[in-house]
Length: 216
Image (tube, rainbow, N blue to C red; front, side):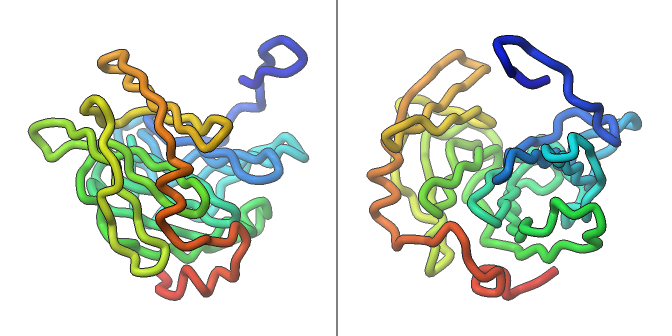
């Protein structure tokens, strides 16, 4: 459903029924619904694309592997997908500039360095990919890691006031990030703009070959 004109209205139904998928908005008002669990309790590799111009859904090229409960983020023409089951700590990146076309047949995915922990939530700010919270398998953590845009290594950049995993995040004005842990009902606001300043500037639009030279 979408909030428009002071009321909720129903959108057209998706092509494939699923739950435990992740949804991201792309430039131009489109949506990507990725992965999830199908009717047979099986992880899906499906990407469902919503075209806001035609108000229609179509099936895009698949994820690099079936997955559910993962986290995803978009920056310009790039989409990052990480974690979930059975991907665990895996991180993938692809160019989505052509996904609005229903005729696209393939996406080239690049495997990025694995996450330090499972259960981290993805957020891209200023071209820097952040992994927020997570778990070592026995307990949750409060750490925030960032993937350096140049050397492609995860760096510990900050600590939150509480441990959490699989959190929801919303980017606020002024470079602040709202972090909501539904399990514990804890909420915090982080200054991520200051964290971004630690890294080289990354353009929002770039040649995909610059970032996706290793294709899958």
